[in-house]
Image (cartoon, rainbow, N blue to C red; front, top):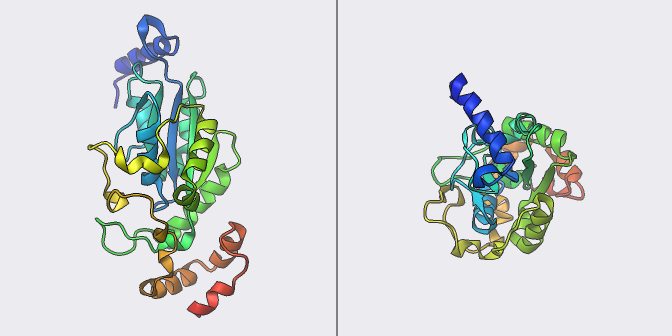
Length: 250
């Protein structure tokens, strides 16, 4: 937490930096990756950190508002942060930059809810995401998704069409994204926290439908009980054409 004096000094410093005075580099963009937990946010972060030119990144989860408030600019044109829960702080981060020259861009990560809700983190026992958390994130994404400073990245697209996603993000952010996304695994920095990836490896399509494995059957039945609206949501979001898939779990 900054003292009032340090906060005032920082405000002056940011004003000087935004003007590019004294050889300082203005911060052009802050890219905020957020969305559903276990939806590929860490994978996307790794791709961006290896590919975006002249970016300050952290190699681990950092909240966008804290990064915006307490990181001193002046040496990089781009700031990268990733925290799934920042979906709940989009309005606050946007407000912070409202009077700044920096453009803030929110990249919201999406994934089949059944995959999100059956995902397991290597460092955490059991399933990661409770049903009520999924519902809350869904509501906030629906609230934000149509804003001009928001773009959506579907996990399946990231795995199957990484170069298409790379072009999408380059256009959306206005940043130079050079390193190929599908080669990210060969360039991940040593300090990057890879635990949420359960290991660094080339993109693997087999991860897309792991929720169908028999070991998740009981979990899917539990999800259907806790999220009775899920079948409707799956059709609405384009993951299913109808509710026929449910028969296997009844």
